[in-house]
Length: 272
Image (cartoon, rainbow, N blue to C red):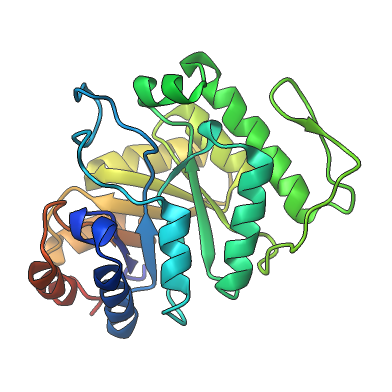
């Protein structure tokens, strides 16, 4: 049983508002042996804040694709992950083009993390009914895969329908790796159908065990398991996550960190 690789979850106030800081952290992470950097998404946030919103409405959060494109130009090896895009609130054809372009510009380093979303005010503001978010996510994933891989891309359904069109450039990676975020049977089934990986956020080792069991019921072999831990990462915690089946630990700094603190944190959590 090998020790999990390690990535970093980038979104915090410093990274979101200071492009030089974002580059410094990503470049230093690459130097220290982190395998990936991840950026999350919320297009809008409920104001005033209501549960289960993770942020205040005034908190900055940069668009993940724009941020990762900025970092792609300044890094060479580290993977660039979206952790995660709220897929049903995006146009799948436009998004497929953006993701394929980012994979080309990064020379095949993109990891596409997507989820169905959970903030009703955000989805409603963008025009997506909560009841449709799962079905739209599945339909959009199928449509994007067709645009990336099929000789004659097409989709025929209530949420996305097209034929007689094509889109280039195609991604460098075949397949372009997709990671599903979500901790429900629907997310496990979506992972089995569409993805190469699964991502759980702020989970304990025991919670990971439950998720891995659900994924095992939905598919074989298991996908790559990435988790942002809920525990401080001492040796015992790493061992517990390893036993739980984690392949990658995506560590997250506190959201209000300044750059000097982030520098120290990055070195303290670097892979052994």
